[in-house]
Length: 213
Image (cartoon, rainbow, N blue to C red; front, top):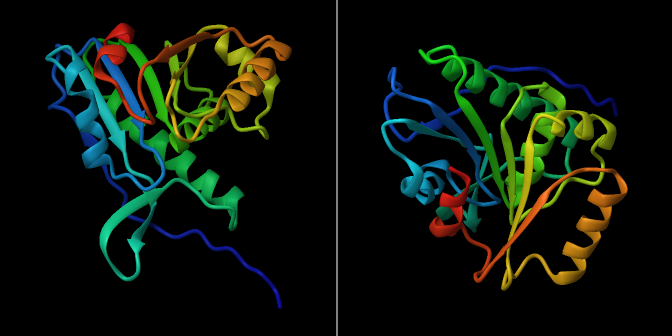
């Protein structure tokens, strides 16, 4: 048996919080977690959306039914199956969104933030490293840096970005041991960061989000 790969054209989607106008001074790329959809996820950011701030929520390329063959639908950025090609595909997808949106902005020195939630945190990290795109702040919310990432490349990129780690103290997917391992990993690799803890679960909290405007 011989395995072959072939590239095909695929229609993907993303959501904007508002029309792109000449007033946009701040842009947020927000990457959802496992099993979420972008249309639902972007609603978490209404608290920071205004005439000067544009929120962009790409949707992962792989969709599935949560249970059986119907009902609720979710999306995932990748699985362990053929993972390197899935990573390459979503990096290309995110690069195209970035290029399409940024090219329409009238103000060229806009503040650009990247937030990855849960599974989207690993996606955000890989995008930053593989694309070389500059972000003013990288926010990993309820997620961690993937262990297979090139730390030297990440360190170089984060010299010009602010890294923020945000975790709820009742997060059902991240325990204290995992947080401790992540902090040790960051310190050992000279990655500067700010750790923000809040009273909550695996969720986006508007009052915390407003700290990063």
